[in-house]
Image 1 (cartoon, rainbow, N blue to C red):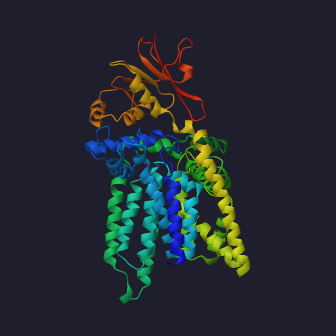
Image 2 (image 1 turned 180 degrees about the vertical axis):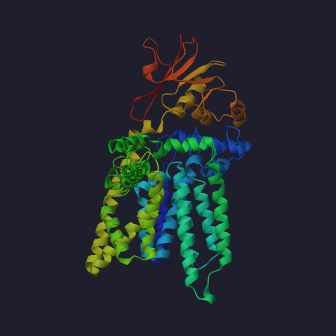
Length: 536
């Protein structure tokens, strides 16, 4: 067997280990979004409806008003068939997508450049903190990244086999049904593919022209898949959610525009120079550029502790130099195959530029394969600059640094991160509802405080509530942003009503001082997450 095949097998096995080892306990708990994904998938599997009673939703599931694209929900269903309603079933689609993306990155690197660059790109993607973090959680963006990367790979292969354009369009379309960001990124890739096909068609001799039939079929499929998404944007509920996350909901540029125009006497020139769209454009540019901050990429990641460790960036420190070298070779060569990773990164930052929060690891995640390709281009370019003796030493030196950095990261991630980040992952709900089910008396009312977020979905998930019963209660019970505030004998409250004989689960601060807890739920660091007590 050739060395590159052995190396590829090793990389894939390493990728599988890093994404599957202790996947149900690191990160330490399902976040509420994962829990909602899982229970909705369970409901669809059992009844053909989400737990709100919507029949086989295609475009989006409500998910507490977030209206998530439905792709990941349906990806969970086969795993639910095998593993039941469990943490493993929720996280496995993302893990397998992460492993598969490693191979796709190798295939893209090999198709664009050569096997050496493909192998290096696969290795970088395998051990990226960014990729590992997202692959071990039920993040829709990770599955969407795989689908987008498949679309890119097939569009490259389609230059020789035209029928693959159709399959490429299907993968681009599926990515748009899996995560919001791809609804911008995938059409941009489709536009690039279309322009390249058009130029290829016009330049080819009559006998060697690519088939127009496949091109028309591809265009039809692309439009057919985009049309439901575009038409659904008119839905007032989904439009409201988009407004909440959009920078255009920020009134600051409008107020600033009015103030500047007033200061300039509201002249024609001032109305142009200080137009609100000019200021919004400046704000978009600021949001866009933040994604390329060295601090964000190589040092700390974004502010959300679920998106990373805060001790490491999305990429390793040594990759700063490799990405820089990769960008240099792109500027020197300036061919499409060298420009593709740069376009990929540029497209991926656009969805973040349109939202309030920037930089944002999840919305920028589709760029991860492109950074792996740039790092691979960089290490191969640096190795070619030096002679044979120094070439080996340089590659071994870079790989040694990368190995040290990755070992330090993996130690922190698997040992310290689960303890330090437990509260960010809403740790404790599993033990809480297991204890409450054992402690509550028949027909006893149970109050659970909402201070740690979305307790009702954890109750449904961990007690495996019958989706048919939940659906029957959807139009009856009180809700807040689609969150159930009561279900059966459980009531989920902000403030605890004074009712004698009720069982209560809350933080220690909400338990009266003269009451002793029946049971205490601890975080991994020993601090108290929940106390269970009874009102006297």
